[in-house]
Image 1: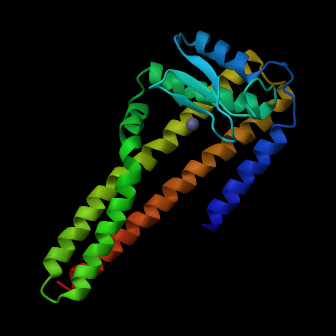
Image 2 (image 1 turned 120 degrees about the horizontal axis):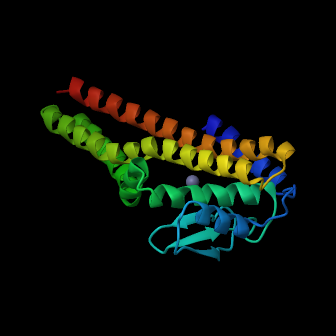
Amino acid sequence: MIASFIVQGNLKRKAAQGSQIRAASGKTANQIVEEMLREHGVTGLSIEHKPGQLTDCYSPREGKIYLSDTTYNQSSITAIAVAAHECGHAIQDHENMLIYEIRQKLAPIAGICSQAGVWLAVIGLAVAQASSGGGALAYNICNLGILVYMGAFLFYLVMLPVERDASKRAYKDMKQAGWVGKDQEKFAYKVLRAAGDTYAIALASAAVTLLRLLTIRNSANRRR
Ligand SMILES: [Zn+2]
């Protein structure tokens, strides 16, 4: 939790700093999106403003790239880095990148798997505590919980390399096309890196939950 706090704080700070610096090219995030998609042969996507903060996202279902208040039509380093990152996802999709496809498949069930897995383990533990003879049942309920939770864990596991890859693509194109000045590249990288760190924290916290579920299962097992 403390690590998550620090990482989130760092991202907010870096993103806010970057949004105060105008990119040397003077191009807007919208122009960057058009250029980057064209460069990679991605067609048929539209750009839309989604009011709010951190609402930037690529929606394959709608065929849209949504840009938030601080990104849409903005020319800051943060706006350009964020827009290029979302294009990175569109390109992953366009190239049928395997881990991206896996993430997309897991995304709709990850939340449910995460909650249901934990609840099953808690129920398993309660069954173990309530009955001396219910040990085997409790153990199996816990195992089911772990299995269900794996759906969420896998999601976080593939999300990290997917996000890192999108940022890598963004940074490469940004440098090549000169969307930010030479002296601004380092800062743009820091913004992308700070965003990536939040996914590392999400994975670490999912790993901790998985370990907890295993501990609960083992304690139910001892009562068997
Ligand atoms: Zn992303």
